[in-house]
Image 1 (tube, rainbow, N blue to C red):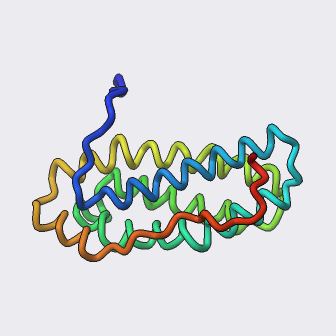
Image 2: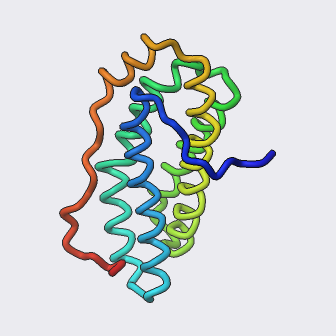
Length: 155
């Protein structure tokens, strides 16, 4: 299966989730940048934990509450996304081996976001009614990007 390089046209009802995905991809980039620069793992972990609590966890909950229900929890793509949410939550909440956890978070979060954007959301857009997408748009309150973090270790 070949993945198209053309930007995906996202329905208005899912655009706020896609913007939040962009913030998740930025977290992955910042983790990689921190490792490359030799930044202390605790500094990276503090930022990752903050983003997890303020952005990612609410994002996961809203996807599960508003978006995934369009296909239903028994749909194979939704099952995969739910399993990945659980795995990412375990990685973030793992208190041991910070470097390994951050490495896995960086890898798995990026793969998860790419899956949702390229596969799951595409499927949802194909089957959702305009009313369903409108309802998602009305119900979801977009999570603010974390711009106020003082320790910009990635610079």
